[in-house]
Structure formats: structure tokens, C-alpha cells
Length: 328
Ligand SMILES: Nc1ncnc2c1ncn2[C@@H]1O[C@H](COP(=O)(O)OP(=O)(O)OP(=O)(O)O)[C@@H](O)[C@H]1O
Image 1 (tube, rainbow, N blue to C red):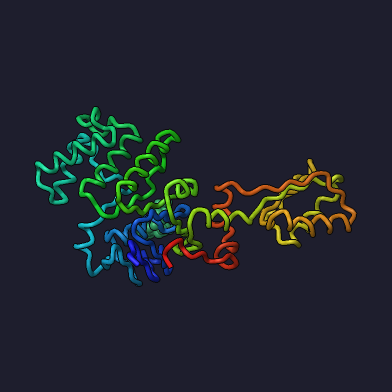
Image 2: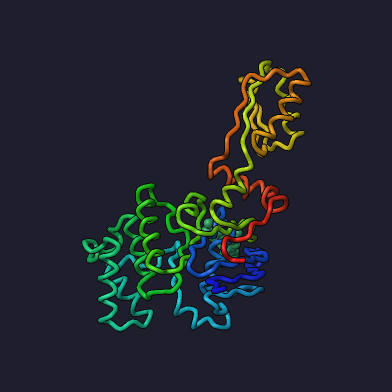
């Protein structure tokens, strides 16, 4: 299979800190991959290694069939990176930034100007092209970052947290642009802290925490994986029963059992669907605890992500390792 990314047991050590602890995953060409994880998970380090900015401490990483260490120069000509610490210069105007970036990629001046104009058009930046970047809004700046990334017409583009810090409207607008870039044939690897962003943009997700892959799969596989962690809410009739009820929930595998004593309400997560409630409710009844209300709901995407990355037992040790869609 034609792989865009092939990472095998990669580690990265910064002094005492192991930023990556044996990372392995693959991504086929022609699909968008999201590397999803919380702050400090190792996403930027992964992008820095794959884009040849920094070598791995051990392990092997190939991008577009080229080794990130042995074939560094050849690989650099095929990829581009849009980083969180933008690649543009605030003292230059929009057009100048694009032309300078083109020059750095070895594109002749006349061709550079043509490409810059086409990208300004495409990213709706023509009227701002002569303005210095300090006068750009956050959304305009991100669009220019993307344009700079595309000036060398890379086969594969890395986007490191493309929408962090943007307001919801600019975020949606940037998603549209990113989808368009993909539609025009550029392979894309993006990092993000947001499951909804990975869901909106990616064909495949690699969930990373603490320098390791916790789970991988298509967005729907990932949602199915987290979807089993349903949240349950039980209101008992007599508030003095809440402690006994809480221990029954815990004994049936519920996690994070919380008691709101005033309202005689218990909440917990990790209940495997409505069927799992039957033995819980039976036990409560046998123990003489009257239940007034029961509710069960699927976690929101954010809650699910939180569960996977913090309550890592669910995914790292007991959860099934999903095969990435189309890679194996
Ligand atoms: N140059 C460095 N020197 C020392 N530690 C580093 C260095 N770069 C990264 N780290 C550490 O390695 C870990 C992974 O960092 P990394 O920036 O890759 O995470 P991230 O997932 O991109 O996080 P964020 O979303 O905050 O950017 C963190 O604990 C970070 O503090």
C-alpha cells in the first residue's frame, strides 16, 4: 500500500523528558489523518519529527516513502508545515510574505508572484495583500499561514493545531478552506486537541496521550469506542440511601460515582449501555432502595475525549485497539 506516513516505535527524549515513548502508526496516501491529543501529548514533537525539523531519538519514521533522517533533503522538497508559531513575518505585508516564502523554496521570482496572487485570491486575501500582518485578524492570519504552506505546492501538508485560539466563526471558515485544500488533492496531516475538529476534517484519527498511541480508527470507530462509556444519573427516593446506592454503582463497574446528597442524585460514567442498568436496578431493588428517576446518556465528544485521555484504563489497557480504516 502507498503510505503517506509510516512511524515505527519512535521515541523522542528532551533531557529527562520522554516526549514520545514508542509511537507507531501508519496513514495511507489520499486520506486526511488527525493526530488528536491533549496539551503535552506529543503532537508537535510528532509533526517536528515527520517534517524533519528534529530527528527521532530512536525508531523509524517514513513520510511519502522517504526516511525522515536519511532522505531529509528530498523529503523537505515534498512537504510543508503550518505550525502554531506561524511561519509568517509580521513586518511584511501579505503578498511579501508569500513571495519571500516562495523564494525560500527556490521558486523563481515571476512564478512566485503568480502563485502568490492565485493564493491571495483563493484565500480571500486580495484586499488585505498590501497590509502588514500586524493589522490582520486571527482568522486572516491563519489563512495566510495556510497560503504560505501551499506556496511550494507540497504533496503533503502538516497543520499543527490550525484553529487553536480562533473564534467559532473563523474556525468554521478555516475548516471550509482546509476541506477545499484536501479536495484539490493535497494529503493532509493535522494535529488537534479537539475531537470535533478531527471528526469534521479527518478520515482517520490517531489518539495520542503521554507520547503513546492510545487508540486509532476512523472518526465513527473512535466515537463507537468512546460511546460505550455512557453516563448514568439515578435519583433515589430517600436521600439517606445515596451512599449504599453509590457502592452498588461502583460494584457494577461505574466510574467517577458522584453524589449530590441534597438532591439524592448520583451520577457515574462507564456504564455499558441501557442493558447494564438492569443488574444495577435489580440490586438496588433487592437492597430496598427506591429509585425515583433513571437517565442514561451518551457522553458528549468532549467528555468522551476526556475519558479516553485521562481515564486511560478504558482505551490503553482494556479497550480494543482499532485498526485504522483502510491501512491494514
Ligand atoms: N524542546 C523541548 N525541550 C523539553 N521538553 C520538550 C521540548 N519540546 C516538547 N517538550 C515536552 O514534550 C512533551 C510533548 O510536547 P509537545 O509540544 O509535542 O506536545 P503537544 O501535544 O504538541 O502539546 P500542545 O498541544 O501543548 O502543543 C511535553 O511535555 C513538552 O513539555
